[in-house]
Image (spheres, rainbow, N blue to C red):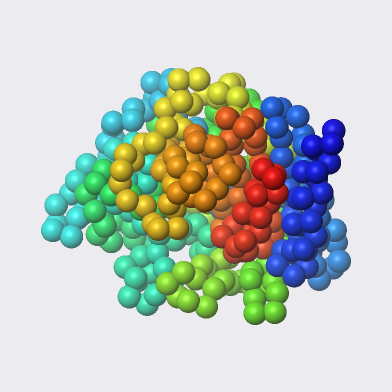
Length: 378
């Protein structure tokens, strides 16, 4: 128990230093070889009413949605309902974005899963093509239907020929729509059948099952976190700023976004990530899990800040811990969510970590999650 206490003290110190100053509230969970080694609910779910954070708080998940939807697609591939090398036009016949030269390349399911499709996410720069076309990455624009968003997306030229480069993107939104077509229902139906029902993730969905438990979102501000307005832009540099609409998750007309559209709890997510760590059962076969957590982008260039990391079909994959200056093991999976979250699955260390906060962007790209990881590894 001594080692656990040391870990607890280290993580507590990180959280205590952040509460109220950089993070309004959150939940941090860590399991090692199936045993809970850290669990803490901290700060406030609603600062203005003084309501304390709760363990069963529901958070807007942003890109923590992606591995859930990717795993759904992989489960359908196992069942023969989709194929990695099948073109996306099999399910979305009108999804035919062009290259700058006017040609229409074939985008395959594997390109979407690995973010090598030539798609992107827009910035807040006025001349950004995604911003000009008003493409939504599903953090904003409540009530927007997919058909309209697809029309906008297809109007923007691809950044590169699919398979020739890597760029983090709206690809999993496109994949989610293909999943819905392949199953003949909604994306929510497919995710429930393949993932959330088998794992009994009762609070995780494309809607909020109990609004009284929904965490109020906050954004980084000059003097600490600011309660988000509707909409709300976090970040002063338009090249890196992100636009949020807290109301989106509450508007049933909003398209079910495979890339950013779900809400859920830390406890539910730990069930999912533990299933991945243990080899995929009961949602995926071991061989599918091995493929999904392997490097699927070869030596394609990623950003300088991503040194040491490659990408699989679910998330980033650790390839070179030294280059990444990280204690995380080779083969670990890791990603985040813009509303203020990060998660880690490290099979070699037997570790799964879930960090959910109500504070963007400190909880995702700030120092906080990296400090938590460092404290867990010690």
